[in-house]
Length: 345
Image 1 (spheres, rainbow, N blue to C red):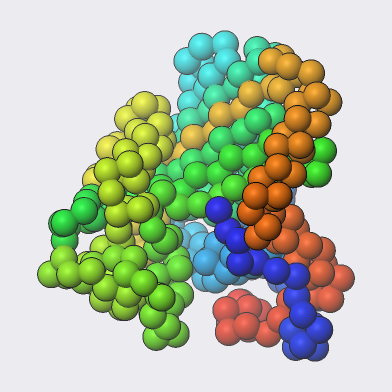
Image 2 (cartoon, rainbow, N blue to C red; image 1 turned 180 degrees about the horizontal axis):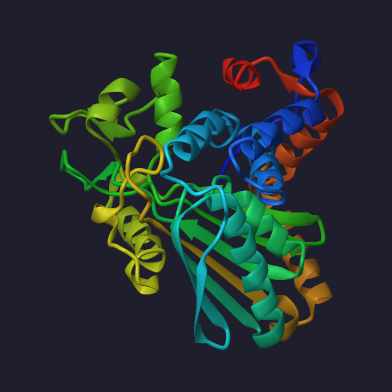
């Protein structure tokens, strides 16, 4: 759960450089010139910009360069396509061979939502796409349609077991969302101590963590992101429970849908091979289980009780949505990643 994203300050606004629509047009153009047709190009761009605008740059515009490289090299196909296997009335598996991740994931969450409306529960597993990005986007999309939704993806080995110096688990992020009377609640977090994207970002800026979140190549705990990249990230809580949560979501988005186990997942970022990782989308239609209005009222009351006991608690997603609204009005700041993307052709 992210608790450190706040609306932009006046000082930050003064450093705004580029309108949202200008960035969107440019990225769409980059993709379409590489053969990605609308609406796929639009879906990819909007998901990337949602992550960037809401304060999660590791899933934002910095990904454009890698997507273009993978398209240019033929590792990813510009045409989003997949085969659909109906495993039972309420479940599907999408099998893609090197398809762009974002459009397939968008189709998967919409299919899971449709299946849930028909059957109460809808599940879709996806195999073989590129990186799908910001999980919040998909979870909130389903929650806005009246779903309680869980989305997860399995990532390449970057996480060590406690006491080890060998990576075997992915950071395996998960997001879950549901509607409340106060708006959509959406938690999105890594099942490791931190995500690999955060480690990479801090290593690029030589910015250490405030506590040990990984190990170096010898297995020694460290807060140095460069050392962590040579060793591995610790599991959530650095204990057995964190490992087991990680394993659960790695199985759901792996062998459970006919995919590979976590230790065999290849990198989707710096790679010369087609992706083999999996993704998992699960929706429950709230109206099939209880009265939606009552559900939203009760969850709202519960959140109020939580705030009364923990004043720093807020509904996950609220701050980042405010930040996105601010970006839509004022534009994006001139970050190095954005400047690099706007120079691309």
